[in-house]
Amino acid sequence: MIAWMVDWLFWISVIAAIVVLGSVVALWSYGRFARRALGPPSQALPPGEDAPLDRLLAPHEAAHPGKSGAMFIFNPYEAFALRAQLTALAARSVDVQYYIWYDDMTGRLLAQALLEAADRGVRVRMLLDDVNVLGRDPLYLALDRHPGVEVRLFNPIRNRERSIRRGVELFFNLVRYNRRMHGKAWIVDGRLALIGGRNVGDVYFGAATGRRRNNDDIDLALAGPVVTSAADAFDDFWNSGLALPIKSLWHKRRTSLSRLRARLARDRRTGAVAGYLERIAMVRHDRRAMGADVEGAEHDLPLDALRWSSATRLVADPPHKALGTGQTDWLPEELMPSLNETESSLRIMTPYLVPGTAGLAALSGLAARGVQVEIVTNALSVNDHVVVHGAYRWYRKALIAAGVRLHEFSARPGRGPWPVQPREMLHGKAMTIDHRLGFAGSFNFDLRSAFLNTEIGVIFNEPALLAELNDRFDRAITPERAFALALNGKRVIWQRGDEAPFATEPDSAFSRRLVSFVVGHLPIHRWL
Image (cartoon, rainbow, N blue to C red; front, side, top):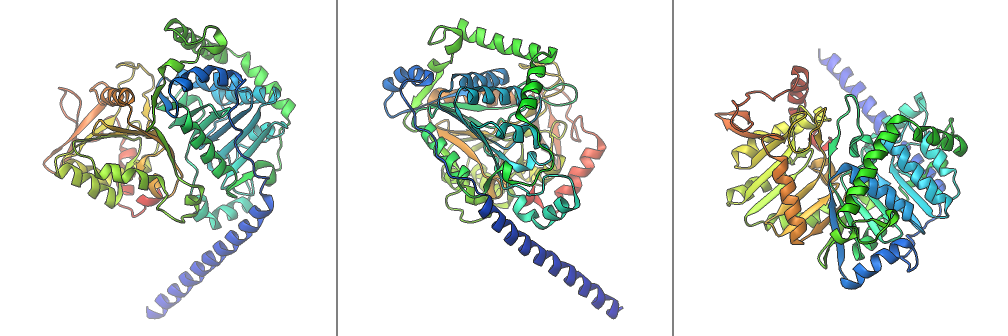
């Protein structure tokens, strides 16, 4: 028996040593490759005076010297329309940074918008996180073939094709590859930017069909000095050495630019695209009917809705967070002092809630000293990450017991303020503190956003924006759209208005409940 245990421990040690050695060699090899593959550095182009966006913003900026403008974009069609319209107005540059850019209808429509801008001589820089590009390279490779477009991937895998080599590389680089760029930004001519929770794809722009869920999401449109901060943050990632040109990676399949153009032209002629673009046209028509600041279909941007403040500022993780180095300059360090100083009210909207031990203690401590802490997150029935929900359920009972008001988003299909089928999933990430400070961006209130992913967001104190965000929160937790959670003895119950409470997670299959239960008891919460 003892001899068997010795042999077992010996082989475990041998395997562990091989994995560690392989990981060290893989990191060294990747580092050498990355240094050779780095593209030339580039910087954001400064604002000008004669381009359309320069002229449109000039009177607004002159009326609010030194201040930054911001407005919320909640409507998914408006979110798509603004990206397309700003890109059509671009005269110098478009810089886009995304965790996900799907090769679906809206993803291709916006890719076409970027191509059309590049055809006019606009410089386009496209920075994508590799985890959702890997295996779907042709679209981005074709875009990169345009002389005015450069595509870079953040923290990429070298072997792009499905093969044993790619599997081996992923295995030995798993620690590195688990750290992702989760920020979202669309910056045009150094004048206007969109920052928030939306990626690029049908589920983010109200175009999902079949069994795919549309996401209830939040963007902030920005103008003024805060856009310069966003451009600087983009440059930090673009030139970090962690973002590599897509053409430097090992591909077997390549798609020509002419073939991509033909494909995009065919897409434009489909009924689905025509129907979606009609909805977008209606959004722009409604915007003009409400009174745009410049007449004409080309210039109906809702710039009068911008709220100007000298306190609006960008907060962003540095790219070296993906290396696990430093911590004092990470985004959570910007947020924690304000959270700890909360006096009366803290409201958190987050699709994924995994506070960890420290976060649980902080939220419980606030509730214990009389702060009203309210959180809305996704119910299991609509959550697209069952495993992450399992980690969340580990903290759920303790949060409720501490006095936190917890709500789980699960809108009834076909009912409520925003009728949808199938049910939407909450994807907006925001918080308000004492009705005096707000935050919106890409940051989830979970351990992955805190320690592994790089994030971006905006802190503001403008009363009108705070009122809009609080109204959004109020609507998200109505009985038509969410369950209120409580404790019945030691068991969690779900309540929807005056209806009888549920004793198990509503509308969820047993298999999903089982997976979430098992995951909740595993020591892997930080890696989810």
